[in-house]
Length: 490
Image (cartoon, rainbow, N blue to C red; front, top):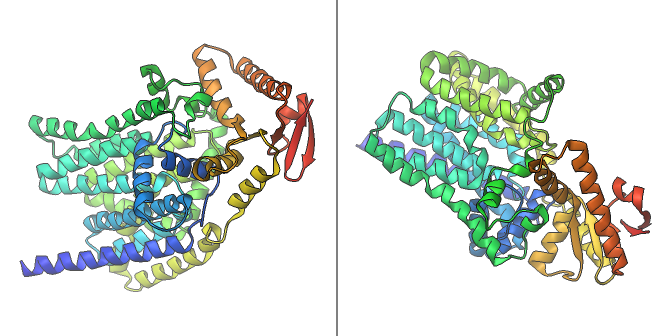
């Protein structure tokens, strides 16, 4: 009993140290206010408990909202950024615990966890508002309960696993890619029918969180993307459209066979860069050790890795490098196993790993550091101040969301209408696809609708500006530069 208490105390100190060091590093590099793209949208969505783009991310919005109410400093965007950093730090604590169960080596598990925490894809998600650090926290927690269930068969571990898995769905629907691997991890110890029922009851809590969408839609929150996407969330059809991510259907499996080799090359390059090359070599040794020592766990982790690789290789979006984070979690666990194998044969190996971690810190720090970055906020503030009363500003998703944040959260320029043509295009494309319209026809219809909207605004006497020289507008209108904006006229 004394030995067990000592081990638990030591484990607790290790967890605390990992959390404090990681959170301090992420806070040091945290974005000080609103950032661009999804970050601005999620911050405004959390503040207003609004409706963001598919799949809605209701659990993230509610947890981030609660976090902003508990944290008494910084603006709303900073607090939501801090929420991502906190989720990231907790995720590293759990990842280390999983690594300890797989390797029984404190040094190997800690070094592998540090490598993942210092990797650019994960670190970059910890310094601004994003859903992926919470996604990794749920993934690592599910892995921990899966391993505990395999070892103990305790009903509590199975129920907690089911609850964690369900909640993960409430945050991000890509959790479905983890399901096959999780099933493989559970295969060798199957629950009783009664335990299955208890697990199902715990699991369903997560999907039920999506009732947030019709409830908040009915409340018409300050940030509500549903109308611009052309979806009615008060209907079952509209709710399923959102939850299934229909607006991104054209991006899913969006590459032809001839394009996939390039995507595979880009992924392998990202994987090599993420673990600084040498880490990937050591992880390969760890994967072999995992296969040799416990094939059930190896298969479960490998299926999680492959499911995410296959789906995201075929996902045609420009920012998918962070979507491979579940893959990097698996590689980090194999890295821990490889470090243990190597340190048993080469005692200096852990010191070599420390050197590599130092290099990762040195090279990745300036690439992810947003601590002095006020460019996004300054840009958005400048654009809102520059336009006359009752103006219309047209922009893409990346540029328009910071302006929406300033409107929704800080009440700046409520007279200005913001039109996100990128979001509108995605929503209308999905709706026209459901009507069996062909690809070129869809594009033509959407273009005509956007042009008609601008014509209507101009006819109503509203000043119209664009956040850049948008090609569609250049074809149909005259664009005149006025500072950073372009005035749109006939």
